[in-house]
Image (cartoon, rainbow, N blue to C red; front, side, top):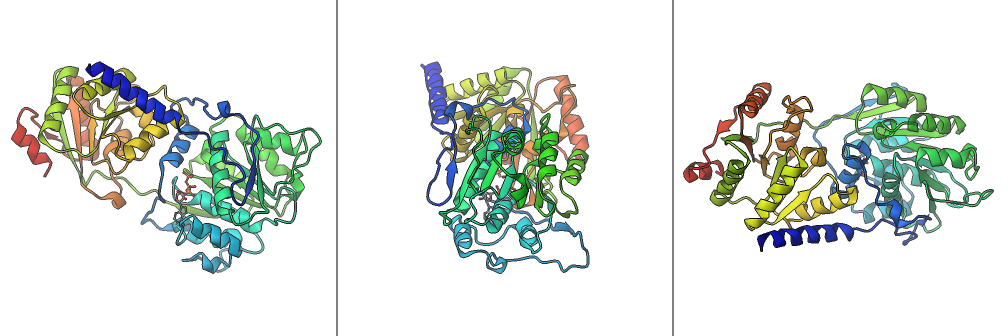
Length: 474
Ligand SMILES: Nc1ncnc2c1ncn2[C@@H]1O[C@H](COP(=O)(O)OP(=O)(O)OP(=O)(O)O)[C@@H](O)[C@H]1O
């Protein structure tokens, strides 16, 4: 029976999601990681709008560097000192094992932000840095390289300290340290995260500590596992996510106050709103500043259509007609509610489509697994609610269907979400197709306002006319 096959598909998806195991590969090859945790902790459920969850999802599903044509903006603390930028990793005179680690990760040349940030971070005497660029542009790799360059493996105590907003994000960064430090067998890494219990009075011998602010603060002060006076590099990662969590800002500042004056302070953020900037100035004295603008999304390369319907069933029929007339490699379909998304996924599945459903109650790792399968082409249609997919880049999808138009909580058009759903950046300038389903006077009004906002015409499409649909594919 068709419903059974849908149920089966869901089971399969969930099984695939479950097979994503917590990242606890400790002590592989080089850097040994001391991680004393239980698996249950990994599968924490996030509120869907949580920035930390979004950030983690993007990290998990990203396979490549986000490249950009925008220029980096550099503000030097000492404007008279020469500004260095590098076009190759060799120019940085890294330790051979480290260079080997960089190349083993498949990095051929520094990313845009790394070109400027790396020489600054590796300069002598050490300089402080505040850097902002969108997620995926190579910030993590940059500060990991800086930490690994400065650490002295022979000294068996913590010398580099990195703060992350959550346990899961700390693990992700830890993985990068392990990979890049692979050819440094004498280096090791400790995770200062909840659940990682050490015996009182113990001192840590790992040279790099990565953790969340609360635990790191305890380890530095109350428990004295770390001597903060011996820290040479202090990294504050994902500052924007950090300050969104109650208490993290104060804890980070208290940790920073314990560090020696000549400790190098580095702060990274994907966004730079006022609050982040204020925080950054408190924790990073005399900083150099590097900013890389986000590539703007545009609707210029997108063909936009709308379809007039009377109700949900007609919208579904219109969708089937579109599928019947044109070949769609992969599509993303957005619904307003979880209920509609579930219903639609079921109906499409009955029609024989291979459907992936992103649902609000899924845990972040499960969501990542669903997106991963979709990206690999195992499913051809991804049905989701906006809350679920917010901030996730699945740029290669050429067809986007707004089964429901994006509205904010007051029912007004959500232009930003509309642009993010269907817009493309210069890099992915491929033509795309967006179809909006309109099922009431109210939604027609929303559509008109979106059209006015972007000053871009959204053409009407008659989905009962197969010839007309075929034309939109050309
Ligand atoms: N120079 C490089 N060449 C090729 N790939 C790179 C380079 N630097 C980083 N990468 C890869 O690009 C992806 C994004 O890098 P990274 O995680 O450092 O970015 P980020 O700005 O810290 O983003 P996020 O905060 O989301 O992690 C990763 O898969 C990383 O391995």
